Length: 322
Image (cartoon, rainbow, N blue to C red; front, side):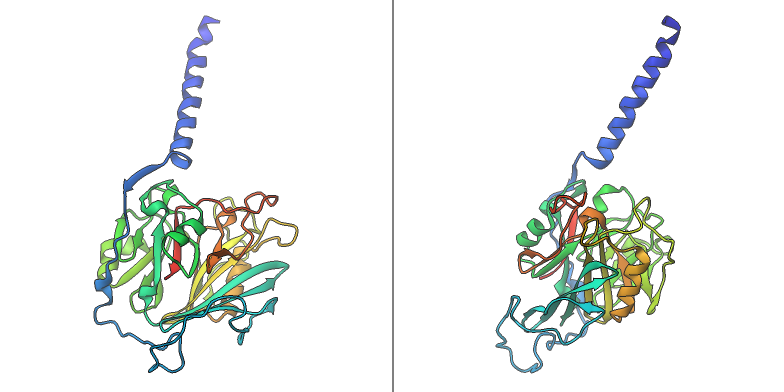
């Protein structure tokens, strides 16, 4: 027995170390910066501003804000639309949320037009930048008076990948993923982080940058194959994506999945749907149980991790309009 003691001790230490690393990576929270709410609005100096996003009469500044399921019906549909649009309209923001059926899966589309990309904001859970600092998408959205919100890129589960939020660089260590950059002029671009630093991106006018991926659509063309997937994810999943149709005209897309009613989408199916929406650029954000859309304080989709319980998963960050 004695001759096996070293082997037993080594195995026990290895198991303990592996458990610690796993917990440290996926469970233990580490706050690097509290009250991480700064906005670098200097990016918008000199950027053209249009005030007619929410009102056909740009000269009327007394437009009443309208919300709710009965505000309007959809005038633009893609695929099989299963409900009338729910809308929000003010002088600077127009949002229309519709539900669609795609390959037997419920998909929720928020068509967003803003007068300035400054309305497309991001927020960290608990207003803290760090590892595994999480909260429900709806909770973070409520804390920031978000009109519309979706989950972000799960930045806090990784140590690498650019994190640029509201024009501020929080992490400048690249990973192997292409980065989605949202510029102050309301345009999107997919960027190779090995070719440019995070600060250089901000200097070029990047307002938000996400590191998850992959890119779904570039220059109007689907940029994933039928076999592409995120890590070890299943082929069909709940999904979250962000796309741009034109400057300051965005689509926020979330699909259900893992339920009897909705199987979920593959990346290729999601990319095809985004292309049908007319986007020129689209990007895959964190999906699975994280996929959540909140509109006017209400969770629109059916978030689930196991397919049995419909419940939000706590996430690191959100993308929102507000």
